[in-house]
Structure formats: C-alpha cells, structure tokens
Figure 1 (tube, rainbow, N blue to C red):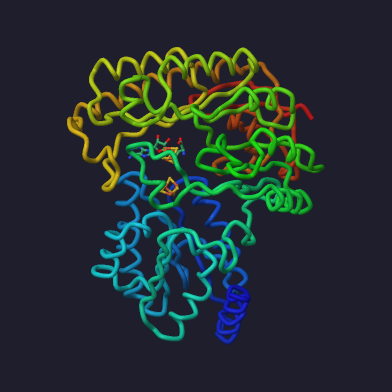
Figure 2 (figure 1 turned 135 degrees about the horizontal axis):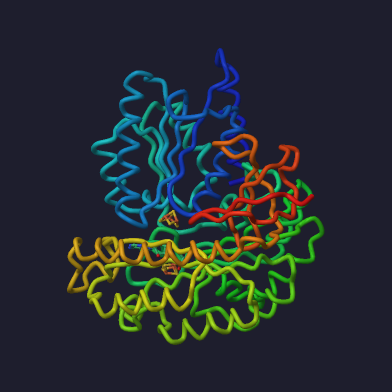
Length: 462
Ligand code: SAH
Ligand code: SF4
Ligand code: F3S
C-alpha cells in the first residue's frame, strides 16, 4: 500500500464535503484501555474524513461500535446496541453502521452479523484499523455490506496501526501502546486469540510518539500493553529501561502503565519506579485468584505465596504505592476452600481498588472444556462476598488518605456539580475539589478532607 489510508481518507472527505451539511459520527467503545486507545485512532480517522462529532447514536450519520468479547455480558451489550441501531436505521436509512474490535475476530460473531444484522454496513477487526477509510469508501461506492477480517497482524504492509494519528479527549493526558497482543494464554482468556501474539514496538517509534505527545501538551502518558512486564523480547531492552527513557522526555511529568503480570514483574522495575519520581506510584497487578491450585489451572504461572511475597517486596520498597487488582470468581473447579484463599489474599494485600469479575466461559479457551464448571448461584454468592470484602478494604484505604496532600492532575469539571473539578492523584485516586475551570490540565496540591468508597473530596492548596 503506498498510502491507501491517506488516499481513501481524502476520497471519503470529498464525498462528505459535497453533502448539504457536515455529517456527524459517534463512536461507542466497549472493553479495556487498549480498545479505548484504538477508538481514539478511529475518531481521528473520522475527523480527517470530514465527520463532526455526534453526542450520541441518535443524531449520528455514522455509528461505529468498537467491541469487546472478554466476557459474555460485554458481547450481550454489543448485540443490544446493534439491535437499537437497527431500529434507528429503520427511521434513518442513510445512516451508516460500522462494527470493529475484538469480538469481530470471532467467526461466530461475524456469522451472526451476516445473518441477523444486515443493517451493519462495515465490519473490520483488531488487525486492520488502518483499512477503515478504504472499507467505508467501498461501502459508499458499492452499497453492499463490507466485511474485512484479518487472522493476524500484517504490519509489514500498510500503516501499522500503532502509528495512526490519535484524537484525544484530554489535551493533558494520552495513551501510548508499547506492545500489542498477548502470549500468556491464561486458560480462561480470549484476548490472545483476538489480539494475536505478543509484539513489542521498537523503542524509537515509542519515543518519537511520546515526544510528539509532550510537544502537543500531554503531561501524563499511559503506556499500554496486556503484559508490559514482558516488553522488549527480541529488542534487547526491558520495560524498566524503556520507562527510564520515557522519563527523560521534558514536558512529560507523570508516567503510568498497565497491565503488569505478576509472573514477569522483576526487581529492575521496582528499582526504576522507586528512583523515578515521574512514575506514578500505582501498580495494577491482577491476581485473579488467591488459590494456588486455581492459579495453576488458570495457567497464571505464580502461586498465592509468590504473589504475597511480591506484594510484600513492592510495599517495603515503596510504602506509598497504590496497588489495584482484578479477581475472577467461579473459575471451573473453584471450591469453597479455594475461594477462602481468595478472601484471605484480599485481606492481606489491602488493595486500594479491585475489579471483581464472574468467570465467563469463552468458547475456544482451555477453561471452557474444564470439568466442574461452578454453579452460577454459588459463584454469584461468592462474588457478592468478595465485592463486600474488597469494597470495605478500599473504603478503609481511602479513609487513610484524609488529611494527606495529593498531587492531582486536574481533568475536568465534575459532571454533577460544576463548581467542583475532578482529577487523579499519583495512585490514580479520583479526587473532587472546588477549583477554577482554568486549572484543567494543571497539577495541583489537594488536601483530602473526606473519603467515600470510590472517590475522595479535597481542597486545593494552590
Ligand atoms: N492482560 C491483563 C488483563 C486482560 S483482561 C491481565 O493479564 O491481567 C482484564 C481482566 O478481565 C482480567 O484481568 C481478568 O480478571 C478478566 N477476565 C479475562 N477473561 C475473563 C473471563 N473469561 N471471565 C471473567 N473475567 C475475565
Ligand atoms: Fe488474558 Fe492472561 Fe493475556 Fe491478560 S495475560 S490478556 S488475562 S491471556
Ligand atoms: Fe475486551 Fe479486547 Fe480489551 S476482548 S478486554 S477489548 S483486548
């Protein structure tokens, strides 16, 4: 491809310019930060093709849904959304509907769209974001449903999706992919099948993008990958070394990253985090279960004991670290005893935040074929108990911040009370406080005055 991307963007833009008004597009995103970041790229592509931003699907001329399939309820929400769009398109036949993302990498989902969702105009996957303009143009010219799914990355041809330009919601913070895909094959997880094998981006491209972000006003960057701790295979560079390089960029004042896999988190990362004040004192370190037996069935490649030791080491090096995690409840074969280990681990680690998920069977993964799938009622009851436990711990952790001063990057006015501004502390704490709107994008010292389960209230000191 010479520059099919730019060429097709110009051709769609020219069609859009010839309309009697500027068409509007709406992007709905399901799933994780990687998907949200892909959506930022697709939003920029839409702007370049001449679309304005629609506030919702209802007034959009083009609706794009970026899908997730990590759990069944994410998929159900996508099909619910597609059903609504079918109705909407019944009233506005000229509306275009495009669907992309992880779920489109599953044959069954695409078959269902072909059969029951004929109103969908364009379908593409996670490996060919840069083809969106070309596919949209084909749809505009042919009037047919266009489906283009690749089974793996082909970054040697065309523009690698890692380098597509990105629209940002906030000028002061930005995400940056350092790697794509995943090789871990946790036995429950669909991600390696829909995002492909692990590929690390060479540091030159990452540094170039990070410098450009700093030049355009980004003070905080979030480095993204499914398992950043295994960054750099074949590149002679570790993730800790990459972080050190990013720390050298002037203008970037805070660096976050996610996700860390406990099996690959080495001492070098702890040392770099400790030494570099720019790196946020926050680690998202998904544990999934507190039972070593279940962890082995999950193919996580660590035990309860080694996870606890790792947490101990991290906390003794950085006593002010904020630790967050993910749990899966009801994995096949999980007994009451296994679950008790999970509660015990949660109690001991005292996470500042935890996402709790009910195990969801994903066709094609090894866990889907495992015996002793847990009765949904039993799993639901355990889920409630774990949620109460982690929420209690989070509330307690938040209460300990009252009276402390946090360095907060101010984001935007509070949606419910416009007198308040909202921002994030180093540990990713959500903080609301009275301040002028002009402070958006600035770092402000905030004294915490009150704590709730999921957020903090404070007063600005500057
Ligand atoms: N790469 C990251 C997270 C990927 S998905 C990691 O390894 O931690 C985000 C979270 O979704 C996972 O941490 C896990 O808790 C959850 N998840 C993944 N597959 C799931 C499944 N089949 N059922 C329930 N939760 C799942
Ligand atoms: Fe899924 Fe495991 Fe990879 Fe995370 S590390 S994306 S849970 S396979
Ligand atoms: Fe979902 Fe894909 Fe992320 S399956 S969790 S959007 S990588």
